[in-house]
Length: 176
Image (cartoon, rainbow, N blue to C red; front, side, top):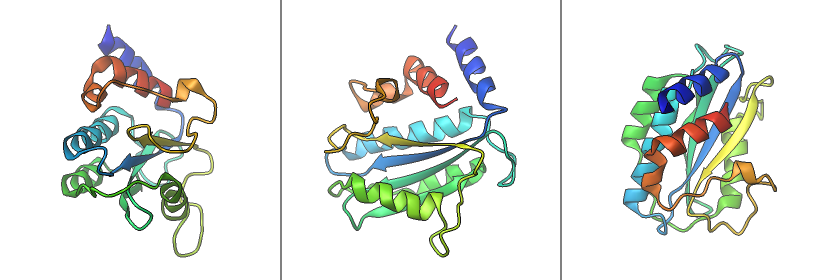
């Protein structure tokens, strides 16, 4: 049954444009092992979603990843892309920040460097796409991230749960 759900969930994304920006907490509270579990989760999401065929493709998914830490530690690991090779290569090079955590500056950095072009402020996210921000964190943020939408908050007992089929399928269905 989980395979069927995954196929159905992924199929729902094939004709719907979605731009997903992952914000990955690189703070010392996360720990390096959990950090690697989280970035493997991002790569698996990229492999399971039906990605766009080009930057001008008005359908399907594109994803981006920002690793955040302190106000000065913000790293766009990869911008909004459809290219699985680019995503995999960037994730293979990712370095754990092991710093403090400032989610407010991470949101601003993501908007100014992923959603918009840093040079001229032009929109890089597709106008017709649903834009989703996905925060992977220990939950200690000092901010309300779900905007009151309980269905948008996924709480798990540990980072290893990110690779469990039940969690993964539920997340993909939510994205799609």
